Every structure is written in structure tokens, then in C-alpha cells.
Amino acid sequence: MYKIKLLFPLIFGLMIYSCMSPTDPEGISSQLEATINTGGYCLNLDYNDSLIIAAADENGYQIYTYQISSDGLFTFTFQFGNNELSTGEYFRANNVLISKMRNYFLLMDKNDGLYASSNLSDNNILTHIYSGSSNQDYIQDVFLNENGNSITMYTLNKNNTFCSVYLHKFLEESFHFFEDENGILWFPPGPSSTDGFSVEASDIFLIDSLLIVANSQLGVKIIKVESNDTFSNYYSFDTPGIAETVHADSNIIFTGLGDNKGCIISPMDTTVLLMNQITIADGYSVKGIHKQNELLALACGDDGVLLYTCHSDGNFPLVSEIGRINSEYAYNVKIYNSNTIFVATKEGIQIFTIER
Image (cartoon, rainbow, N blue to C red):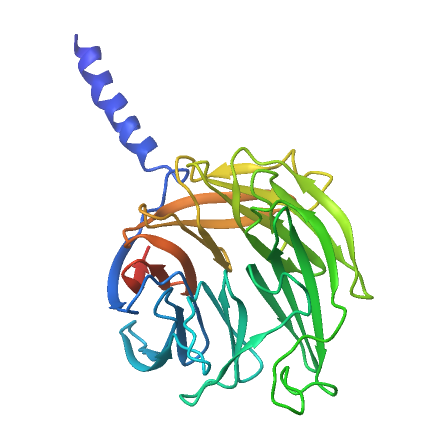
């Protein structure tokens, strides 16, 4: 009996130790610093060093200046916003991209196409960008790639039976921020394109020369952008659920799935891609993904935002869950830095600070 009495606390102690093992979630504490009421569902957001722009659905775009103090205090001021064109037509904003090198932003309405702003100040003029094709509307996603003297834009366009990807390239010596002598924003004639994507394809992401497409029930399709701005097939793989969103960082592809199927993490190297795939966030539907350094954030609708650490060991992803941010319904997420997270939600933009 004495031995049994000694054995019980020993086993209990081992159980406590195992619960503290490094393989378990590290755990975080999060604090809501501010909720910015965008006047409509905030479906997406983008930011630079001084501005946050919300794609606020029926309330168009909303622009705010912000500051984050050294101790994490977030303050903001509304600058201006609009949901009406100069023609008197109204638009709904589903996506926004701020140029990282120039003074403009892009705004997307999935039904009516793509718009470009004339600048980032309050005398903004939004102009419809025409692709020169019959399906200039119904743009499902856009990705912007800029360098010193050129701008390349990739759009995922939907028509009646399938989606296409278009490549539109602007050279600064020929074009002035998409503007011709009449002040009309336009695409150059004859953009490169490739077809064959699901009519429900929803998201694109470019890394190096590879364009990754969330191809709905057909999984993920990757196409290579050649040096002459044409496309070639590179690789595709199936997913256990509907591929809704994609993101890539370094040599890893992240695929957010619907129907509570979580997120597939895949090495970029096609020789080991399927063999070394792992699944995280099983039981959650992933609507938005962002990664910065080793911090990975997943926007999961009613379930808020899931946070992980993630890096790769050669061609094998190493991921550890560190906690959840209890935001309002999360459409998308952007990591500002290792301590501050911006979340696009039904209630507007929510700003959280985290501590590990």
C-alpha cells in the first residue's frame, strides 16, 4: 500500500509535466485595442505606414490614418471614404490593394470590376479599369506586382462557364500610372491570358514566377509566368475541401478550405509536395490567410482568428498552434507585426495586440 501511495503522486506529476511539454500550444493573451466602424461589413483591408483602407461592402472604401505607440497603443482618425462614382453609380467594395511604391490604390467590386484611385488624398477620383475583354466585370481577385519601372497586374476573371487569369503590364515610360492623355485609366491592348479554371475559382497569389489559384472543388492550380509574360502549366493538386483562399511564403503554399476542412500546408517543391503536406485548423473554415516571418494567421469566420508559428525544415513544414483571437466574424486578417493584428470583420476593422 505504501508503494502505491508513492506511485500515485509520481504518475500525477508526470501527467502535469506532459501537459506542459513544448508540443502543446504555447498560448497567447490577446487584447482588443480598437474597433473601427467602417459603416458596412469590412470584407478586406490593406495598410501602409500611415493609412488603413477598408473594403466596406455597400459603404465602399473607408480610409483612416493611424499610429501605434511603442507600448502598442493604437489610435486612428477617419480621413474620407466613398461609395459613389463621378457618374452617380454606386459600387460595393470587396477587396482593396494599396500600392507599396506609388500614390494610388486599387478597389475591387466582384460584380462591376476593378477601379483605380487617382491618389491617396481626399480629392480622390475612382476610375473603372477596362480590360478590353467582354468579361471586364466579374473580377474575382487581383494581385499587384510592382518594381522600379513597371507594374504588372494579374486578375482572375469569371464568365459563364469558367474563369481566366489575365496579365496586364504597364511600363512607366509608356504609361503614367495607367493614365493616357485623356486621363482615362486603361489596360494596354491584348493582355496575356490563360483559361481552364473552375467557374468558382476565387483567389490568386503570386510568388516568384508562380501564380497560385484557389480553384474551388478542383483544388489548387499553379501556373508559371514565363519571361515573355505568357503562361504555362506548372502543377496542380486536389484538396479535401473547397479551396477558397491561397497564400504563399518562402517555399510553402497555404490553402484555406471551406466546409470546416481547415488549411492545407504544402511545400513548394513538387517532388515532395503531396508527401509532406500537413493539415491544420481541422474543423474550421478558413477565409483569409496572412504570414509574416514565422507568425501565421487564419481568419475563420465566426471562430475568429487562429494563430500559429510556422517555418520549414528543408521541405517539411513545422507548425505549432499558439492560440485564438476572439474577434467578430473574421473575413480576412493582416499581421502588422509580431504583436499587432488587423482583422477585417462584420463589425469593421478590429485591432488586437497579442502577448505570448
